[in-house]
Picture 1 (cartoon, helix red, strand yellow):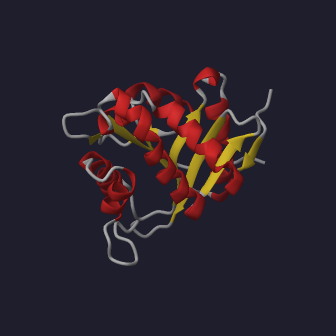
Picture 2 (cartoon, one colour):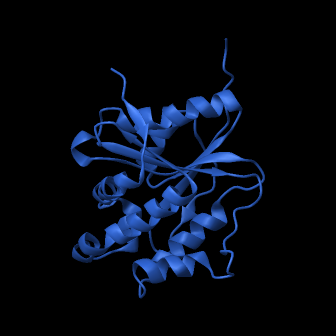
Length: 204
């Protein structure tokens, strides 16, 4: 059975933020950013909202038609992604001030991801993918990813992501991604696993 997928619009912001918040509450990286579980319950959604707004502004968000999953994508040009905004302000600092001003870990994760991001080749970047906790294991996430990877293959574009756990790398490997052999190590925290996918030749 296929998964009906559509592009999210402004009216889907609340749905997207809720999906991200619920799906990543117990994620190792989210747990490192917000170590106190109770504080995470009340603050984590602000970080997810900031990520969603950034992609609504500059990328594309796909959602399953039934609202059970979403995927956040950015089309990254060949030039290195700038770490500073047009006004010269550091985007990592801006993110911390927006989300949780006294939490330096918000800034740290933003810097680490920006510094580790590959440059030199245009690619599609899967920033985040979220499936409602009660719907995980149904193939919704894989369907959302394939939806974009099929276009990547047609257009000869590579793709990139950071897996937030070693377990999740197995799903991405099945979709053609390969671990880059260099982890992103959070200070006294978990590792993230950058993964790259070369486009596949489309026959016919």
